Image (tube, rainbow, N blue to C red; front, side, top):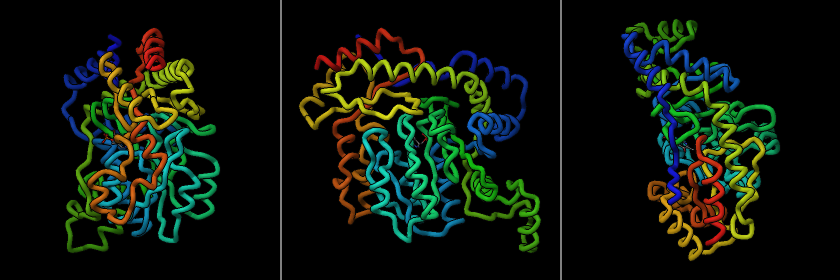
Length: 388
Ligand SMILES: Cc1ncc(COP(=O)(O)O)c(C=O)c1O
């Protein structure tokens, strides 16, 4: 029995020790100095001016879409069909309109030609997802958005440490979102981060994170102007935007600080694992032409070379028999445009038009790739897949 879970040992004894030490010596357990320290460490690691810790990657999505709408007005946001539920939910919730563009197979991210076809004067942003550790950016995509003056927001929830050219993914957009859920490269148990170089975007995110309260702003000028504009309101309870409570606890930040010290080393191991896996996979049966430049995958993407429902069904039975955990459809379970909550809101859109997303939906899956997955098991897994 191969017995490969999706993730293993993402929280280690050293993290637990750090937590216990913190609990023994601290008396403040929510959004405080440890959150601030982790935000600063994350900003340094990523290479951005501001990071704002929240309680999940989904919260990061809801906040960035709300701020996008406030700063750029209502309109359309181009989204990929291979993404997560909350990427779509956040667009809907902010009163923005999602517009799907298909993905490419080589990195499972938005296809620039498809984006070009759906751009319109109503487009406010492209909300690109870096899927399962692949870099999803290209210079031509960045040039296209720059030429048209369209904002880029990056969902990097699944791709901590992936790079494009000489910088990390998450430093190219106006803002970027990370998730620290257990299954990802770095876990704080639950948690997320919003990153940006833009002062105004950052300040608005601060407000949304904590009830929309003016006192959450760290911009003294903005605070005094807003207080002066509302003399009838108590500045301690001045709700500037329709905010949420999406703050993190200090405990999650303590785990994050501990885990960050091993992220780069773990990512190197993940890269070696995925390269080994792909090199052993039979390219006549499986798609192996992924663009690995800058990628850091926490999953082995297994995608058929040709559509073949029978083969795919044999593949999933074989993995189950060997207790190799897997997720069909890759990120978010495949073509998100097929999901009921999307179809109810986009009744005119035909999800089968997204051919590549549909291919991934029906003939793709992923299995776990964690730092201590040994090369012997990787070899046996590849041989097993080749023998189907
Ligand atoms: C691409 C992507 N975006 C957003 C999220 C949401 O993150 P979270 O689970 O922390 O809410 C996930 C979830 O795992 C994800 O894979």
